[in-house]
Image: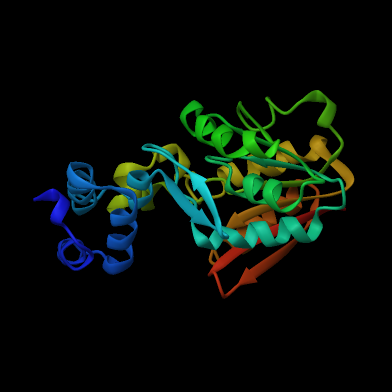
Length: 258
């Protein structure tokens, strides 16, 4: 019976389907679902649906970020963005997260820094619906818009930190991504153009009029793309610094005005 499923049995099924963290995933499913709902959740996970989409949330830097089907799942490597944002955000500062998805950076900042003003933007209404669920209870705000078009006019020239995990997978590498991402997350949240830096360049361009004179733009990238990302940022008028975080296997480029 579905209500007789336990952690060892669920873990065995998940392990057979290729799960690396079968016991942990089984415990999470069992803690959230019961009976027929549990059986259905196990079947969905065995079929390859991301665990976070099944649970309805993803853990990011100790915070539960609500996500749903068709929404990009925050990765631990993006914690490098959060740490850099916290480092550069002044007291009572203004942070904007572009290409926000479910807005994990903005949400973590809003939860950690009650003094900060936090705004997030994405062109996907489904993602923004999740971002609002995360930000609204914390006093943050999320809007639908392409890059900076939805950022309030009052914020122009005042943003202290503009952060973005813009898509950076080269277009011809999408087909080789793990099926969980390739089949269950929107291609627009993964595809960074021919060399993976097309959207990063657009973020840097959008940052120019938004940033305060001492503001910074922080963009996630990969180690092998970091030099190209930095070059694009330099071309847009920023002094770039590549930041590596071995603990979370994260890489970002921090850009300061020249």
